[in-house]
Length: 246
Image 1: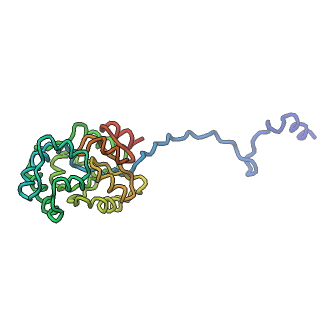
Image 2: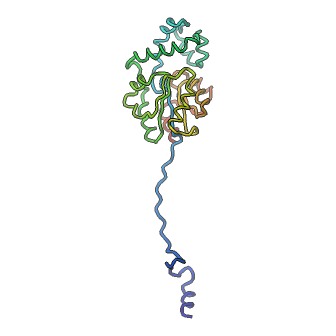
Image 3: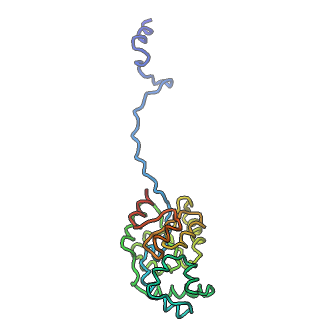
């Protein structure tokens, strides 16, 4: 009776905890570790010429000598700005470039690029942007029609941020290389973005089933890129880094 009286006096909420297996001692809540936000993308595939490297002035300087060698129309003074608003097929048609000569022309341009030495440099801010992506656990790949040797030379120390190179792509062969890089990196397509400076780069990303990104300071104009509707568009590297790591 005394025990029963004591129980009523304590009230159910005041009973001392039992540790005999029927009632466990209440534990204090454990502190939780902060959750690190996952970046929007796990793999970023970059073009090289016009996206990381400021090579358009050099390209213009060798274009007419290439035209004379391979028998297509030279670019008139002031025409280069007009060509920047066209896609690659439109440019080829306008200049009368024989399609069957395209592989030889591409090989010739790679040779000239290799001979250019330090004429072509990275855009200002390219290296810090790549470093920022790598620090945010975004893997970086480069897919380009240029050679890996030339790209590594221009990148310098920034090459350490790049996990995968796939070079020597044909004019319209980037889509297959995107898919190969994605398999090699083990990245999900829904978290992969391909970033370039030309309309054909947007098309290649779409064919590969990945997000298309475009920078507005390369070969094609910002207006022509926007008209083609990429998934993401960047006017500078600061925007690119912020959006890819959000």
